[in-house]
Image (cartoon, rainbow, N blue to C red; front, side, top):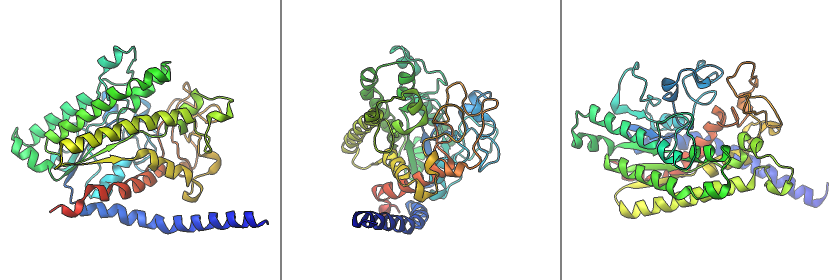
Length: 379
């Protein structure tokens, strides 16, 4: 072995040992969110955090049946994964129950413990606003503004229209505004819009998210997390749709560079909007939820986290092509296979992640946002 190889081997070994040392701390750090003493979590968003709203709009969707939910719940709940989502791990870390989906009117109503208004397939812009851009929103009409209207109704019912009650309760709650906006871009890209046209949508999408944060502040929120977008160039659905023989189009992790650059552009605009909101609301803590780097951390440390290197970019549930994904053979369709080891996969169905990937992302995210939430001053 050459001296260079020896040095590289030592570096890799040290990195592995450091990571293994840090991983147990993730659990401890996650539980330290309890120091924030949040009494509830309120969430708006899309399929990355929907715990069962979309399937109550349309029970014929694949998310309403196995294999979705097979790992943790042993049955489908409407979550777009094989098990838990990041929002579930955040709820566990805070010490509140899994969030009740707003449209589930059959469950016991416990308004003071939080509520989930997120709907899979939803958009930051309204369906009418997208239609004016010749973009179809094919999954749901329950866009961000609709979810915020639900939230308002929920608070009014819980507090019998007493606005002082609403604000007093919400001062001790954690508000999650997103991730949202990803589907606005997904629909545009997959309906053939050029990147320049989709990029021109970003300021409007970010403004919709900014307006949403203003609304929840109006409901009394004093601690808000606003997540950004994922590095979509690493997802099987995009890798399949925009596959190319041009090696220069891919980064060192075989992600499409131009798509990740687009996500970064959105996230940079969102971070600037958050800075503006902080200046306008000095008594409110607004933290950026860095989903991009949380995912990248999992992706780059995949082997050390127990993921199969050969399957990092392949769907666990799916069929077709190099990435085990096809638009006509999606997870949940008849005769579409499921891998026997989802805990070794990052991607569940080519669009959403596995429970294990969400678990590690949540640990990274919680460690990142905890100092920003300034919980030491909560009484």
